[in-house]
Structures are given as C-alpha cells and as structure tokens.
Length: 277
Image (cartoon, rainbow, N blue to C red; front, side, top):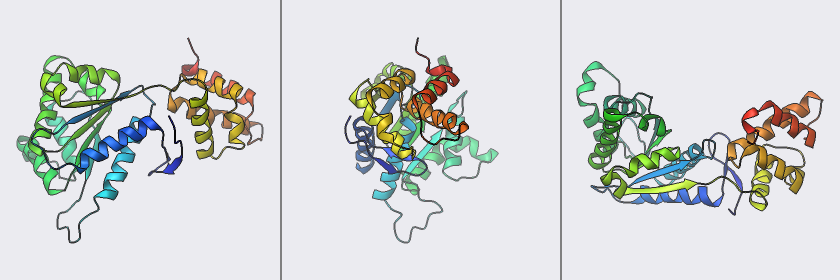
C-alpha cells in the first residue's frame, strides 16, 4: 500500500493508497468505454469505514474532470456520474424514483408508470458515463421478491441505459450478486482489506495526522503509538481517523494541541467499538 498522499477531493481529503487507487482507476477506465449493450458492474466491498464512499467521490471527481460539460450543452443538467444512496425497503419503483430525483426530474404521480424508462432516457441525455450506488447491502439484504426486484432493476438500468454501474457495500453484496448468474458474469469485484500492523499502518497514520493538521504527526506514527492506534482501530481506515480525532479532543480539554499517549488511551475508552475482543 504505497503512495499515501492527501489531496483535496471535495470535502475532506483523498488518501491515495494502492487499493483505493486501483479501485478509482478501474471506475475511471469504465467511464471511458463506449456504450455497451451488456456493460459491466463493479462491486466494491469492504468493512464499514474502509473508504468506499471516498472512492466513489474521488472517481466522480476524476470522471467529471475527464468529461467536462460540452460547450453549448442544451440540456438542463449535465451529469457524467450519477451517484446516490437508495432508501431501504426497496422496490424497483423506489430505486428509479430516487435516481430520477438525483437526475433533477420532478417527481409526480404520473411519472410512476414510466419511471424506469425515464431514468434510462435521462442517462443518455445527461451524458452519464457511470452510475454509482452506495450502501447497496442495505437494499440487497431484503428477502425473496424484493431482492429479485432490486437485481432486475439494476439489470434493466445497465442494459437499457448502456451505462456501467458500481455498487458499494459490505461483503454480503458480492455474495448476493454471485448468486445471479448473469450479473455474476458481468461483475468485477474489488475488495478493500483492513490495514495490517506495522509499516502500512504507520504510513496511514502519518498521512491522516498530516491531513488533520495534528502537531508532530511523525511521533504518532512511531511504532508504540502506531501499534496502539492500529489495535484499537481494527485496521479500519475510518476508525484510525476517529481515534485521532477524539484523542485531539481529549488533549484540548487540558489546553493542549499535542496528542500524548494518555490521550489516545482516553479516546479509546470513549469509543467502545474500538476495544478489541
């Protein structure tokens, strides 16, 4: 996991490590493909907090940069990436209405009957190169007919819209797609693994600490501190940042900006989810 450098990406900062860079590059490459009757679907999976949403956001930034709005664009909206989260308890109608809302189309009762057709029509009219759906496990864990309805809606969206899709969620999402023969054949699975102890975690901590503007970030990445942070973060990117964030709050209670080892210990006690089994 090399090349850890924070660069601005909308809100917050982008951490450019190898797995994330590979995922972003894959999505950007797909967006550069010509329309296909059977476009692929990328399944981006990993534990909560591993950076899936940040990857989607960075891919959207890069694709929007590569495909700027054409001069004289006469449509109401230009959207090279359509990114959203679908509400729970899904139906194909709810999925398509959510996409229409993100596309800026007014939601009226009359649109319900043709929502799926209108979505794919707008994908072409708005120059969409990639559809991205986050937290997809929340809508795929429905049972029976609801799950089949969701998968069918995705299949129709990709095939008729001729646009590749990326769905991001927990590992169960990849398992569910694997049960559908057609979607499994068209799928690319990208897995984000938790950080291991040692040098990899130390590099991550250094980049996070610098990105957060912490005092003496190199000291936080030293072996003793880094091992503690890794152990109480379970190797999950978001937990590293959360622990550092709360350690700084603890330090500030004593009028300090410099994080000490005791601040990390106090922060870990405040966040019981970080306590290892």
